[in-house]
Length: 107
Ligand SMILES: [Zn+2]
Image 1: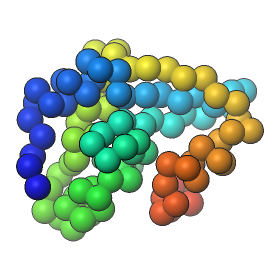
Image 2: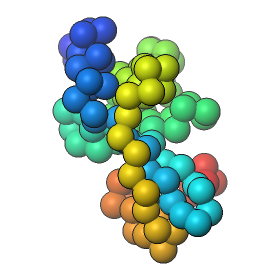
Image 3: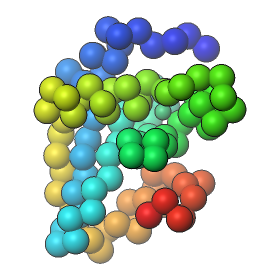
Image 4: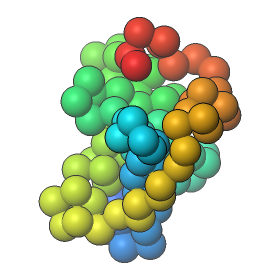
């Protein structure tokens, strides 16, 4: 698997593919990064990402991070992300659309 370059990560940020979904009125926040395989759910504080690379390489101890997490970090540093306000009622469906294998105890 080709390792994405710094330029590739900048590109993701510049193109507005890092998104903060804010659920109201609770204020819960979910970050997603649109990568080459579609939307990935990214949790920086864990850290956690729904992509295959994270599951196999990072959790398997062969890599420290994936490019979604790197892009999220960069987007936060430069305040370059898209903020989307959503309703709390959409929360459950939104999560299940993103990934069916996110451990439920993460939320
Ligand atoms: Zn990832």
